[in-house]
Length: 261
Length: 79
Image (cartoon, rainbow over all chains, first blue to last red; front, side, top):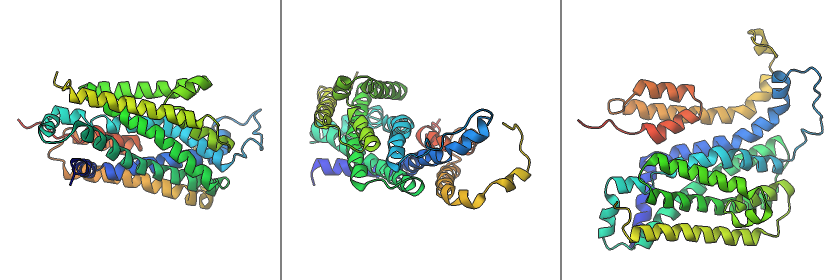
């Protein structure tokens, strides 16, 4: 058995032992369900909270399609609370191994640094992609049930687009987790930078192209408009470039043993 | 907007329309809370601030159990 598969197995047993395998999927199912339910009850919530005097709710406003509901699920849930939960659940991924000396120990074995880094990034990515796809499926089910049917191909494509952004989140947090030693700082930098990416990507088309958050915007626009943006190929390319850079920095940092002070 | 609601207002709600939509949502939230509480109870001798975490898990819906699983599952330092 290669070092890569052994390390990947170890990552999975770690997720089982920390009960991540139970609570993260549940949390993402809840996130995926929140938005469609909230949008479904929005007219009645407005009626009971906002005071009815002088406000009439335009009946045509509430006619949103299921795909638009899914787009707003990504925008309002996965991109905000979802990102925070992802970063916080990932922040210890290398930092804890540095803290208990496991990292130095593993590197004394015949394990290449690259297979160590990739096993971390890929195993976390596969697990979180599983959680996110459960969230997407819940949102899909609720949107179809409460609003209108979401086309399968749009749903699958937007999920794949979002997974590219997820891969960047994972590789970025792994990089930050390698460089810094305090969990609080890791979470802070991760959350602030990822939100910064998401906000700047929405400002200008060029920024959206260069920013790694471009792929999440593409996923949202695909669901909201139903058409594929022609820039999606470039956005994909630049996000892969960003992922390459972050993995490269992680590799360099561990290979040069910068983590020991 | 009313500040206070009476018991009679419960009868005005169309429960049969709401329950099928909200039931899966509530069920999953309850499973999450129960899971956190069971884990806390099984390790109650080794954890710090058991009472505080119990209140957080129960009162802060969905975010409470998440916080517990991320931050609260640290054992007391051996002296």
